[in-house]
Amino acid sequence: MSTRIPVVEQLPHLPTNDVLDALRTAFTELAAGTAVQSPQTVMLLPDGGDVIAYQAVIGDAYGVKVSPYLPQTNCSAVVTAWTLVLSTRTGRPLLLCDAHALTVERTAATSALAVDRLARPDAATLAVIGSGAQARAHLRYVRAVRNFTSVCMYGPELTEADAPDDVAVARSAGEAVTDADVVLLCTSAAEPVIDASALAPGTVVTSISTNAPRAHEIAPEALADLEVYGDYRPTVTAAAGEMALAAEQGLWSPERLRGDLPELLTDSCPLPSGERPVFFRSIGLGIEDLAVARLLERP
Image 1 (cartoon, rainbow, N blue to C red):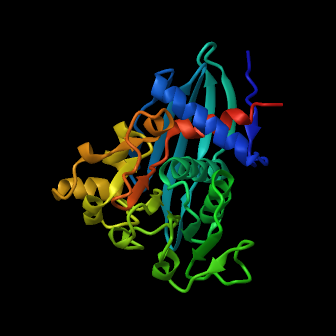
Image 2 (tube, helix red, strand yellow):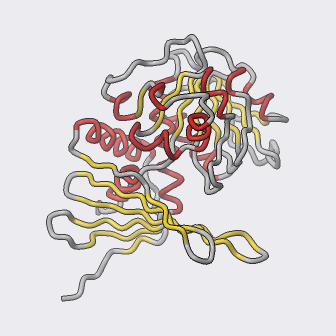
């Protein structure tokens, strides 16, 4: 008997609040033990490149996103991503979708959930480092959870004509983060782009992953001066570049991670003290991909 899998090759518009609600529910279920998140796995390819697999279970659905990174000769590497959802009751496939745009959405929404829990109640000034799709998605999602009276963005090629509405353009990353209450790092950099330890106490910095090996948007040695959180405690400290490097160099210990999103959303870890800058690191999780992919099953 043949099975025809619904294939979504172009992500439809998903309401911002629906994505936030789906991820909030998924992380809360993860805290309760009714969802499962396994570490990502990396398979190295014999001719170079790799394929990363992100797996998770929520309720009666299993999801896996596979993301190949395929270096090319004389041109940019090919990077794709596909998410498959299976029923854990029947074992039958429910959905296959191109996860490129889905990854942008779930990454930005995850950062926004963290900002909502970690930023001071009166946080009003936002800085976004980066100007691509990920940066613009981050801006959209954090604006859905907090009201910012001032927003500044920096990108090497960003002009005022290209900037989002009501967003000022900075001349440098350092200028953008000056006096910021929240800083969103949304770059593909493999090296630090700001000095996080120089920020004011209570300032929240979020950082995401890229394909570069051990990529880090802040310096590993800065972690000792920050209050550090991650997306999921069992996986982030080994996979995040700055955390792994800092631990290897004896500059920081994974035991110093103050909390993760499941804990933050269920009040199971301490909130920032306000005495140091705050750093939130996400590496990307299968539970995020699955939670958003399940929204595509709705009629």
